[in-house]
Length: 308
Image (cartoon, rainbow, N blue to C red; front, side):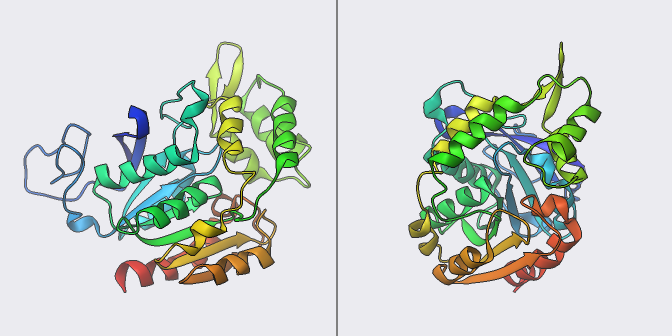
């Protein structure tokens, strides 16, 4: 079960957060606050963790959405309070039209606001790709809010202008609109020129970010806004913020992902309290490709941080 809790992000942008697991058991009586909040929560979402245990905030990557974290959030919610955030421009969150809305600072401030308004802090923040960059920039900026960090398949090095041009060309290659969700799954899992071999989980991943329109199936996001988001970080290296992360941090990569082993291990070295894990038979979508291997890699780290 996932229930929506509304959060106000930077600049008043409306964000949708999704809490997984049943609400904690309390004495009989009404308990939902103005945010659809949990028992014992104040109107602003602050308040004690109660019997849900320590908090975990999950941040998806570019073009992702909170629902991509559902399998992870379900096992987390057995012992922890797990909340996944639809970041600005994604999922059910607001998609401001202004280019200035998609800055690195805005994404970090949104995550900061979510932790504070949901009463999750100090939390472990788990991020995939762009969400991982947001997570470690937040940990560097607000160490009081982050007790642990999981970085999933995100590079600290600059990626460069050529990559941004390739992404723009790739968006233009999408055969929109798709007639059916089966067509979505087939194109992203088999026919996409970026796919080296058939990958059903990749097709399923993109099917989750499509919605039905009058003429067929289209993404829930605006591709131009995704490019704006991406251009705020692809040209720069992010080692300095990584070195400022003081909490325990785990760097996870898929063996066939975008983060190479040498760079991942250098990230671990730069992190003051870094650890390393890799997941076999996984690509960039590590937690989605291999959910069992992902859990095996991440759960011991979380146990040490949250219950140690």
